[in-house]
Length: 580
Image (cartoon, rainbow, N blue to C red; front, side, top):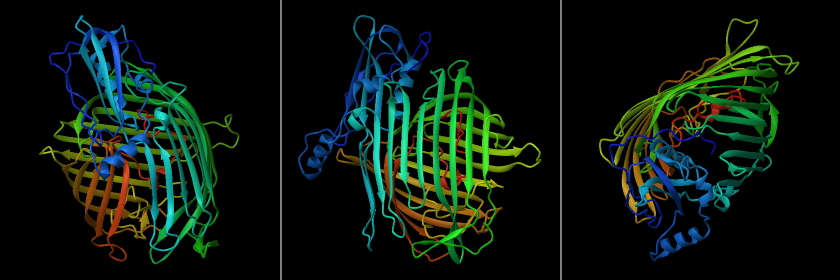
């Protein structure tokens, strides 16, 4: 990692202890070792111990399964871990760099737990001891049905191929009325042996296609000076609109986009500015009229709401990027996951993008103005913590007074841990848009942003607010294979029609349910949730919904739902600070 020299040693009044990481599926335990403060001593050695998620010598069917899984797992190579360490042999041991190294390692999707500690070498110097435990790398998934075709989809891959931080996955889905869909994703988290990322995605959809090539040096830590990105892609798909008491309709949307840009840090670690720029180019080609799916065929729809509503757009812009940050990281346990350690941001950060379209970049480009802003604030302690994140963007043509394509989303969340096993979470989420030039519709049926239990809802609109409340209890460990928890939850939401085609103003809708939560290995942020949700006042039939979700909880505070994200400009950062 390209990082600046270590800062002058920090005086530490406390003694740092290397915590045990009981994070192996069959007892991968990191021994407790007393550490010394990282306070300027010369680093004489760096020891790296990488461990698989499965260890142990128990007997039985489950233990044998764990041993088979361990044989299929390639443990992360020490050199991969070493490239994320901001400490170097022969330099002074700096506490900030030690803590940042530990945080960066925990942020990697193929690492479950990490500890970086300094241990006395008995000669006045220190040995930096780095211990990591991998996430389960094997990807096996799919979906089945009680009716033919019985197998609806399948996914296979590896999140840490050859132990080198390489993600590779293949996915297939039965096309039913249309052709089968296929997709492949390959992401190298250490391209060219550096903390650069290269991602290649391509796929054939049931209707359309998509591809993406993206190379970047992400802004991983406040220690680094620069971040950059270059990428291009195309998405040819259909946007769906739900209608009460009528069949769904679709409209084609073809997008091409490209971006080249970078940012630089100005100022000291923890209190600094980011400044930079980018060149972006995008073309959006919506369909002229809606279609319906009838007996496996696309049939023109007679409704007029979508006919001629969306027109072709071309933008080629020069953008200025600016950010301000006053942040420090606080370690907490079990906010979004079960018993995983998380690094939450305390403080304030603001990010801005200002762009202008120019004809010399593209003779057919709109000469418009584009603005995007993101804000984050977090305050609290490991027992009570509140955070807010907001993203908004919009554009204005030079000869127009009104802004259009104004899109906004955000989340406010309050976490309370009155007891070590209990976490109560209240979350308010909003998404919405005004005068969008790209087709979109927000619904209660959305898996990411809707209401649990409303999978069959047929109402949608331009703006949506959802309030979620959950009480999560960590039941305990299943031997040494996993952490198990249970949760009770309730959702409430409302949709406003706005200017969305077929939009409906809904009353406040409610749902409630219970969930079974499993983290394997223990302390993993990758959490499997099996939720049983019941719609209390649905817009259709009242049927319970069983939903399985597996994803990395706790790595990001807010992930914008796809039903709004698809309407945003592709060639722009969601936030300067997690850019690209």
